[in-house]
Amino acid sequence: MLKQMNTKVYYDGLCRLCSREIDHYRRQEGAESLLFIDITAANFDAVREGLDSYRVHRVMHVRTADGRLKTGVDGFIEIWKHLPRYHWAARASQNGLLKALLDLSYRVFVRIRPLLPRKKNPCGDSPYCNTQHP
Image (cartoon, rainbow, N blue to C red; front, side, top):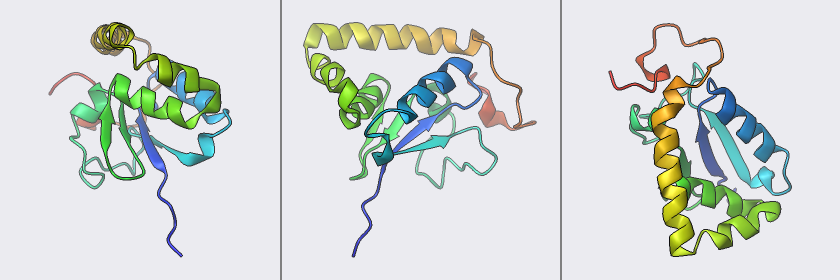
C-alpha cells in the first residue's frame, strides 16, 4: 500500500508574523494533509528538497502532493484548498482582479518582510537564514 504524500508548506520559522500564520493554519481542520517545514531549522536542506536556497527564503513555497511547486499567493491558495474554513478564499482568489490584488499585496509584503521583527536566530552564520540576497 502506497502512502499518500502530504502537501509540503515551507515557511520561515524566524519570521514572527509568518510563524503566527502557520500556527493558525496548523490548528485548522484539514491541516493534517499539510506538512509544515521550517526552512530555518538546522536539518533543512533546500537542495535536497529541490528548492533554490535563496528563493525559498524570499517567497512562500508549497509543494503539492503530486510534486508541483507553487509560490507566493499561489502557495497560500494551495493551503486554503486543504482547509475547509478557507475554501471560500481559494474560490474567491480565482477572480482575476482579486488575484492581481493579492499578488501585488504579497510582492509588497516580500519587500518589507526583512524589516519585520524576527525571532532569535538559531542558525548562527548560515547565509540562508537571511532573506537578503548574499
